[in-house]
Image (cartoon, rainbow, N blue to C red; front, side):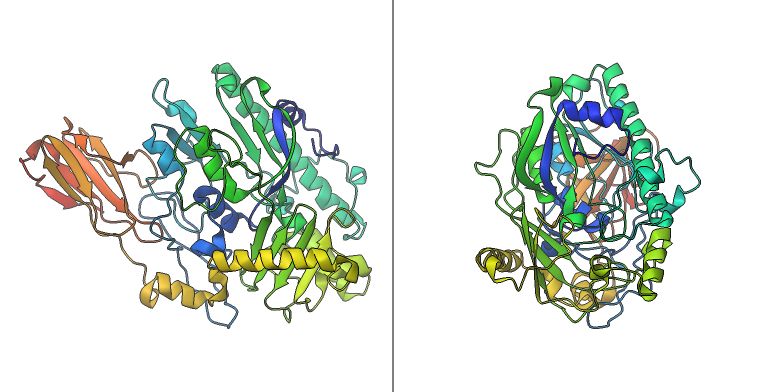
Length: 526
């Protein structure tokens, strides 16, 4: 659907023939976790403190909300970056919380990677078994499936699998040397795409058999640009430009769409399609549905800060053709020598050829030891952004157009990248200690149960049960949004959660001992 037939993708081709195919869709950061924070919040990472890759990692399971930034990570001032979960503004929620409030059954299978642990209020189920199939009969659903088969790590992890694409069939771009190692890794990536196609086919068949295919809106996209070196983590075309398709029932509106869309637009768009009001704080704009923006966006913005153990700060703006980049630290090299990326055989080969003087000028551009304060690229003539036009006088007018746009975005976004990361973390976690959400209070008045919490920005969840249980931190919690009728169940469990904070203790309430004004026999069980 985008002009590359190297991989055989019959299921995606069929989906594309019935979908709106967006030709100018962009993530906000060319790497997964900051990008995914944009998807789930509708906010730019630089505005909510999720711009650094990575802050931590959350694990599924009771009592296992742990975080792990690389142990040798430092910020731009050389300060050690501790383990942390980003504390985002109190008014910012996972957009699925609004869908749940509207009655949707929301599931995620299974990756979150938002730079903070997914709150229990975000999903009805968040696990490897989460599916729309478990909803109540007739309940509308919003289900996310994350397929990892095309992840960067599968270039080496899938190396022993059958390679369905012939290495000699791939087209090697000019910024890579043409050799067996490069071709093999590129063919592995195409082979992974063929595996992905089979997985997508199964998901579509499940919807079809359930009679839901033409009652469902389907989004298909990647969470950043390509997984190969000089693609992932870049802040121009190769890192930000993504495939993006939307299928409406019966293929309504199918065809190519040239409007620019950004990942900050996904959350408001889905809320628009669901008929749910879009919160004013969201920085994106709906591109579909009843709340669709009156005018398409004119520019898209990207950022790059710390990637694993190496920090930098770059910002970019594009009008869909030209990229203008502002480098806050031009003295730093363009190439980031990340340990993780060197698991890819072709990355090690690129470094070997670099050190032996075997790369040409195009291939060496990525390895430049210093950057210019600004960069300009024309993706029409230079799709991989390896020819910097910033000093070419014929592009002066384009630079003068894009420069104030970029500076305005940086200012209006309250770019947290200007603050050393360690300082930002301390502002989120005073003395580098994670703040804790206060315990909820459970009360009854006029026959209805209310749950409250004094922590600003906290969301509330509860479980009703006839048996004493040990609640799971990832599934089965109901979102509390308004007082509930006095339960007939024996137990009520209540939890308060604030993104970036440690969850409150879970309160176990013996619901059959309710009194007029309060629920007694409450005890923490976490």
